[in-house]
Structure formats: structure tokens, C-alpha cells
Image (tube, helix red, strand yellow):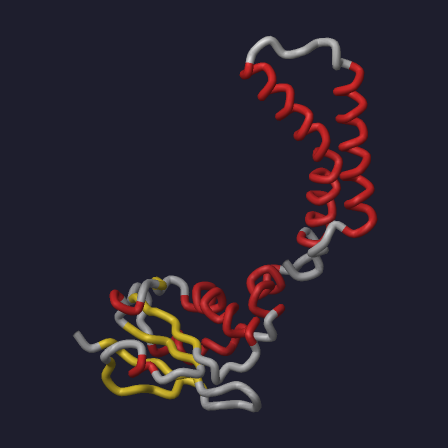
Length: 179
């Protein structure tokens, strides 16, 4: 998520250390009360783990909420693809080509040289093409191909260039699957 820390950092590690130290102190204090059965032992260990990680989990939820509650509806709708430098308007022409309710499959080729963009493209398609339905290429009505020829994915009819190549990014092509 955009702006949310990807690593615990000093504050997160401190919260985790504090929680584990408190859980260890509680375990030490009640060390004479040994669980009588395996179920009691499992419950005690689970309680220690939950208590030990609770400060970190609380810190993480508060950190995430601090960022996400300030996001606008637009920010929320494009948070994933924007991080991969994919603009939400990339698929606007495809919305006009594929009818709502039809199925589509995405295909991304090595011509898209930026790996995060290749990985984020299917997520962008799910967001931008709704209420169209993402599916496997073998069951799709349409192929949405970026950096790869749709003919290499399925038996298709006429290939439409929805968005021509721009800068380092290759053309975006759409084709109806022939059955």
C-alpha cells in the first residue's frame, strides 16, 4: 500500500521486543503453574505468542490506518498500479472495446521491461475493467495483451491496438477469442 511502511522499522521492532519481553516475564512469573495436558500447554503457548506480538500488531494497524484514512477515493482506487508506475488510464480504451459482463484474460510480455509493471498489470485490469470478468486464457472471450502478441496466447480474430507504444512501454492490444 502506498505510504505504508514495508518493514517494521525501529518503532515496530521496539513494540515487538516490548511485547515479547512482557510475555517472557509473564511466563517466568507463572512458571510453577505447569499445564496438566497438551491442550492446556497449547493454549498457554498461544496466549504467550498473542500477548508477545500484540503491541507490534496494534502499532502496525495504527500506522496503516494513519496512511489509508487520509487517502482520497482516487488514491485508493489506484494505489497498487501507481506504485508500479502504471497509470489507471492505460486501460481506458479497452473499456470501450470489451462489453461489460464479457470475460477477458491478460497477457504481459517481456517487452514490458519494468518487472513491477508486468506484475501489476493484471491487478490494474481487474480494477479498470470491472464489471468485466477476469479468467484464464482458455475460457476468455477477449485477450488483453501488453508487450506480447495476443495471437501467441489464444486463437483470436482481428487484433486491435487499443493504445500505441509510448516511450519505454509497448502497445496495448486487444483481440476477441475465436472458438
